[in-house]
Image (cartoon, rainbow, N blue to C red; front, side, top):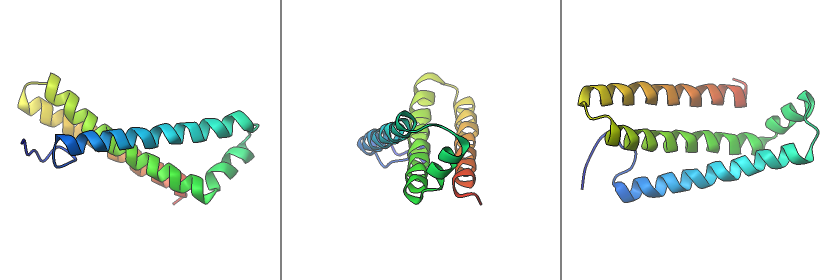
Length: 114
C-alpha cells in the first residue's frame, strides 16, 4: 500500500469511494439547481431567494466541499500518472490545490454573504 501525504484518503479504495461519493453529491446538486431553473422564471429576486434559502445554502456548501475532495483526488491521480518530474508534479499539485481552496473559500463567502 502506498502512503502518500498528497492523497486525500488513506488508500486507493478510500480515494475511490470519496471520488464516487463526491460525484454523487455533485450530480444531485446539479439536478437540484437545474430543477429550480426548469420550473421557475429566473430573475434576480428568484435567484437570490433560492440561494438565501437555508437548505440551498447547506447543499451548496456540501457541493463545494465535494468539489474540493473530487478535485484534490483527481488532480493527484492525473498528475501522478502524467507528470513524471517530481518537482514539477509537486509544484503543480501545490498550485492547483491552492486554487481549489481559493475557489471553495470564495464560494463560502458568496453563499453565506460573509
